[in-house]
Amino acid sequence: MATSDERVPKIMKQGRVVPWLYVAPALLIMTAIIMYPAINTFLLSFKNADGTLSAASACVPGEPCWGIFENFRYALTAPIMQSAFRNNLLWVILMVGGTVSMGLLIAVLAERVRYEALAKAIIFMPMAISFVGAGIIWKFVYAYGTGRVQIGLLNAIVTSLGGDTVSWLSQPAINNFSLIIVGVWMWTGFCMTILSAALKSVPDEILEAARVDGASEWRVFWKIMVPIIMPTIAVVVTTMVINVLKVFDIVYVMTGGNYGTEVIANRMYGEMYISHQSGRSAAIAVILILLTIPFMIWNVRRLREQEAIR
Image (cartoon, rainbow, N blue to C red):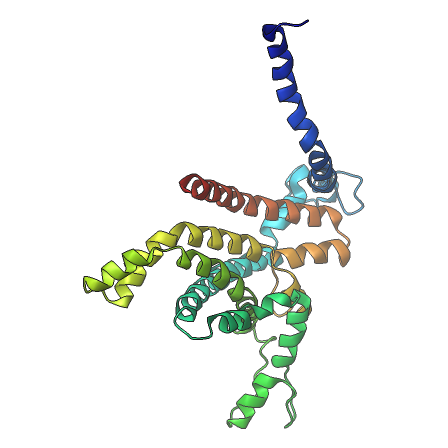
């Protein structure tokens, strides 16, 4: 019969092996649907249009060439890509700022109304609509016609007030803002839900003590509520940044990237399925992944910090 000392190494060995058996199915699935496609995309980014030769073969004599990184030169320096980067930056600034600020404002105000659940349900309702569906709905809202009868809701309101019709989706000065409004309309409910849950975790004793000491509601909000829920705000912001960097459906459905509304994900789709430049599309995908990774890492760290505090 084995002694207790002889059984210890066997138990320790099982403790190292058995956990891997439990996570093995998940690891296999992750490798098949995430790791392999990611590695394949990275390798494809160094090939030319037919996916066989090095991208360096596509270099034109007398023009700038980055050798095997030629697809990345296009992805980083082409005028249409620079326009896409600028538009994505505009989306990040306005949509993230709009959704988080509106979500926080509604979360605070909804707690003060009698029908809080109904109000929040109405604000959250757009999240139940697909991005394609939202794009089609708002395309009708922005519809532009040259005649007296306007099928677009917004132009119908403008003309009824005596104004002139506006081409909301084809004027470069306003079309990006029109698209961002659709994104804000869809995602404000998500931010509101997360931030509302965080606000409910703020101790009532602290708020009442501040009010008794004479603090106004404005100071209570900025000096007490916001600092307490700041970790949650940070997580919501990073989550929204990741979502906005990948924005595609709204732009594809409403403008197709035309009229100066191009974004990174839509350009990636266009290079792959319209221009049939799989190498360029893969290079854009790699750049998009690299842009999102820092925010993902920071988001995970913030979540771990919150779990440690709890």
